[in-house]
Length: 177
Image (cartoon, rainbow, N blue to C red; front, side, top):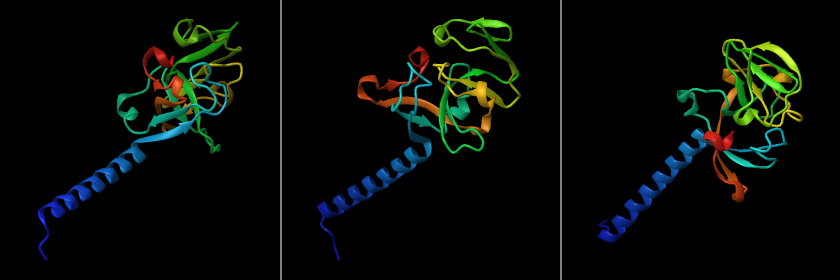
């Protein structure tokens, strides 16, 4: 059976569109995942019921640094948490009179300036682990409670807040800190 040229073109276009859509869905599903913030532990940066897009792949190659937001699970708990990386492997953290110190150096700038941390520590972060805290330390369940998190328990790094639309945007640089 011989197809008319416009039918052939239409079939090729539909096949191309279907394949492209299928690849896009697979890439999106395995690379980026939607995530909803639960609670106020990251306020004012992230609020309860904010919707984020979490990078599950590319953050692994770029490395993680102090101040990065991460989504992770703690062992034995099925819930995901979003917190900020504060302590890197090998560092010693503590807080006294609301001031966070890392390796005996006080951090009072950037995302640390408005947070009054309850007293804790000193805590040494083991190799292969990170110390995570919430931006709202008074209500945050974080590494001060459950200890440093292992690198392999980090699920991804939030890169975009897409809801609510009034606060949507990229979560990079000082805007997320």
